[in-house]
Length: 269
Length: 248
Image 1 (cartoon, rainbow over the protein chains, first blue to last red):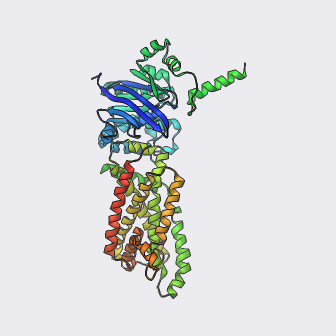
Image 2 (cartoon, rainbow over the protein chains, first blue to last red; image 1 turned 180 degrees about the vertical axis):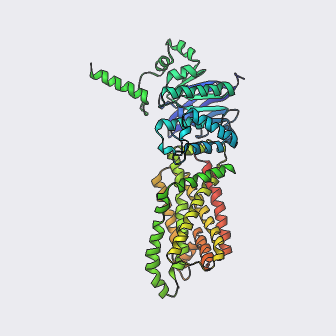
Image 3 (cartoon, chains in turn yellow, orange; image 1 turned 90 degrees about the vertical axis):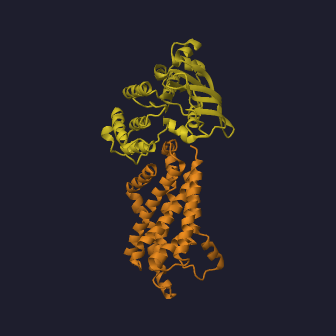
């Protein structure tokens, strides 16, 4: 069971008006593993996820997800996965509970299980007390937590997590990772995640692929990557492989911090 | 079925939670009643047409349904901007169900809006001639609402920016409205205008409402029903097709 590929991607390519966002990438994810898909901003992570999750049509190449091709049988593919998007995707006029319930109905979860899981998940992300409040009254962190809870509601075979813990405090991150690991172990859910927190990826991922400029530059276990680059942490390996240049596309918090530190040092020399 | 229901329910919740939207959308019909109804009323009566408010009210009800219905397509664009569209599109539900849920939701809101304007018209002096025909009038209101909500949603599925959507919708519904017979009778008009009105789906909606509310139909109620019904089904199917092509 562990060796069976649940996602199989071959020569996948996506171009937007002449710009190649994803360039002939091939990789596979085994059933039941936690797979981290890492890369600097603008490397092609989200474009790849959008193609895997039926939101974008590939320019060329093949995808098999749970045995189905997203272009040929999108419905079958949609039945196989759940996703927590990188960008907000909540209805802010609805309450927390209504957002969860809407999701549950779309994924055909019976009312009993729906209600039970909504309570369980909202409690985990500490939003149960606020379930009757409209989402527009929530802070950024609360919205993020709600979104993760919603993505976990229907226990899919494959769960895509696109930078799930961005902007969350360490306590919540730890709680959420415990839940996700539990789901992975007890239900055998395959986890496909992207993150900029290298220590997180190192801790949870069984295997890692690093993508840069639309191409996969390396694949392997965290240990293999460290050995290959002669570094002691995944963060070291990541920087050794992708270079130190800061990317044009919206730098994340960590990168902004580094940038500021660089400028600060320069001024105080 | 449950999927269509939850999508429908969502539109309704969003509508009833936005009091500003409900009150704000009454301004335009009220203005039309005051400016046209009371402004042109005396001339219309002198020309032998009878009470202009009686003639005008079904037209204004149609107008408010038309505007609410077509502009509800903009919610697709809002959902795109707030990312909620993705949440719906990755779900294992058929695009036809999504399209139907959205359309019925938007259409219900448009009909509610139409009923509010109907009450408003009674306040300014409109009196339906046969009260027993009001349920039938509701049927025509529903058909108008479904047709134009589906049209708005279909257009919204391939246009991505809000300004563009508003310009196209205005460009489309202004002629539809002014050449539908909502404001003036279609009798004794220049041939060209009559031809345009005959191919204007809204004309059959206005006619159906006027036929049921004040017993004055130009095309005939059966014709109105068949033509409007066919157009509604056609726009729904075309919309579902366009909706299935959406990429985020």
